[in-house]
Length: 127
Image (cartoon, rainbow, N blue to C red; front, side):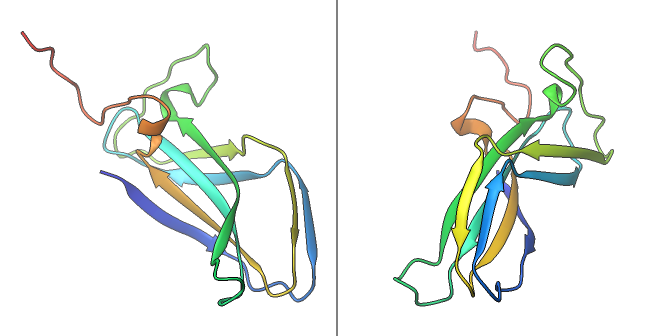
């Protein structure tokens, strides 16, 4: 199961815009589990009909909640509690957006199976 939540979309830019540096997105998240993976992505949304491509990925990243306080301190979530987290994009960004483009950000929970297995519930050993 995966949950995708659009976070924000900008208005179309009135003029060309350059984005340079490390992007970071702050989320307020909750889960019914003690550990959840959250991913974020930011895309450049082209005006409809431009070269047939609706958007292009600018950056994405992931946070496994058990490591939100650092890789040396494992911390479980309390189901139902709301947590404020900041996720930095993996790579530095250098993007030129043309006038009428817009940026869109989206978050996903439990998409991290592409990174490493993190089952949403305990797995029983086969005997």
